[in-house]
Length: 283
Image (cartoon, rainbow, N blue to C red; front, side):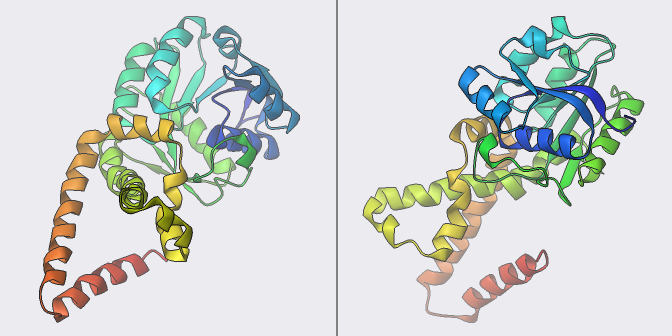
């Protein structure tokens, strides 16, 4: 099992953690996958669906695996790893799938002792749906996975994790953790924030209007159905970068508000054409 791990623990069997488990199973990259969580019933359901091979509510038991995947909301990583670290055996590899990297990497590297190999990773794959019920083995196929090693990260472990993600069908890219957080504040975190705000604008004006939503509103606000627990942590842990992006976005709102307050001009059309051209470049 050169590219895989004999035993894997998924800490937080949700959409991403569950999909990673299914991908490892499909590609034969793990012999046994154990799910860790607090809810016995939910873990039993994941077991019944074949997402995991076993489950536990004991961190000590989950720590026995060769690979540990942190797939809970990022806000609980520090508390979990602080409890987990005393049970880990030398040579254990730990990765995370969090959407914020700099505070996670900086914090976790200080917690793990020598001999425990941590690699920060972020699969750019997901859904507005939450829960392992929506997990699928092909979630990472052709998806980007950002890996954020530091000067302290074990090179051989990084190479092993690269091969593991590539085996799931992902396209791996390396990035500095701080740069990652600047980019994804704009490309992921801000759009989620705007989506929540857009739906709450409807709530502010008249909640009854929501029943008239068409495809434009639905596609623009799909991600407002995402987990508030998950996104609360992301917003707070990357708030400096998000607030900077939000300042620029507010300037753009003010700009189009000014254009619309004037007599119709070509400037309003140019504003939209600029956005249309850039958006078309990623289709």
